[in-house]
Length: 232
Image (cartoon, rainbow, N blue to C red; front, side):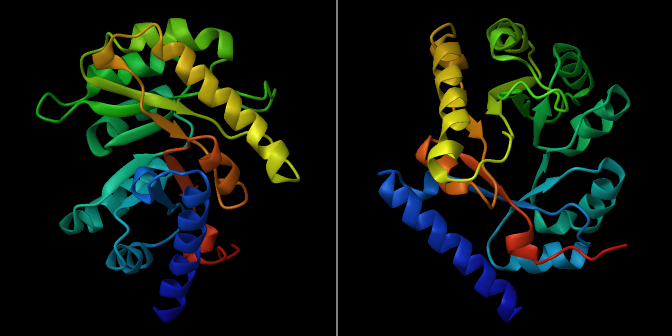
């Protein structure tokens, strides 16, 4: 547990340092603990340090952990690829879905969100570097898609998500994050005040400083919190 506390303290130090440089409030950046492949007890230990938001990539694995840890009242974010056959369980069990890459997926999440639950918070995934191996809306597709999605009553379109290609230094890392920030600003000019986007889900352990300098509001950290993943 002491090692875990130290790891989280190091991450917090990085977040405090870069938000200060960016002249931002540390509270405006959510640290999302990426808990894929981690067991429920590891998540419980992290939650005991005060972290309450966890990101999961694999649906069946996540559902078991959500059931096991329901007494902790954690905030669960689905961050993996979303296939049509996964939308119902995602809509029923998560507070957030970061990886909505098609309007069809948004429509299914909307239709399957239980009526007793608050609207599902979602981010549109943007293929900001136009990589053939990654899914997501292009920058050109983003505004028309956002206009369709904001009309869906059981979803709350919060913002944009992207995972750019790796870059070697902070100046280069900032470029795609700046593109995503500008794209969000462009979309907001076409939305009513009540619909405006407020979330940029971008940045991981290796590039979170660059992301926060470009106004990231959610950063994802896995290994630097939980330690190395065990090899199978």
